[in-house]
Length: 159
Image (cartoon, rainbow, N blue to C red):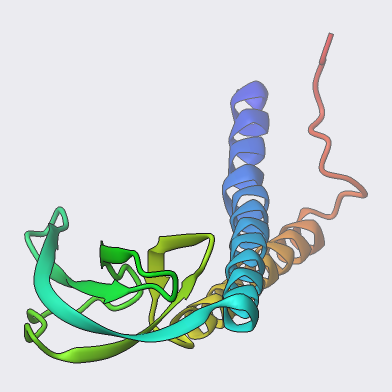
């Protein structure tokens, strides 16, 4: 019975402390990476006016449909690009023949985005990452304070 309690304690610690801290660290990492990429694109990217020509539909597991605008634009070196903007999802379809400003990396124009669209999402991701880490540390502190033990190593034979 004591072995079951030890494994249950370890499982609880992993679920309440380790997973939130790891998830929070991953959110912070990917949020900062996304922010740095958006900042780099703002520095080296080229702004052009594109035209919405279609909508790309994506449905989630709940059946909700999200629409991404498909745009065409001409690069400064004369290439015609047609791409979907992952940075501009909407619950309603985008109007076709509507002009929209996009920014693209001259080395990779197929991955265009709307100016400033990724910075907000990156900041939200970092904030949620900090909240997850805060929750994990609070859970750790609470478990440690209520356990009355000096460490989290369960009693038992580990050999």
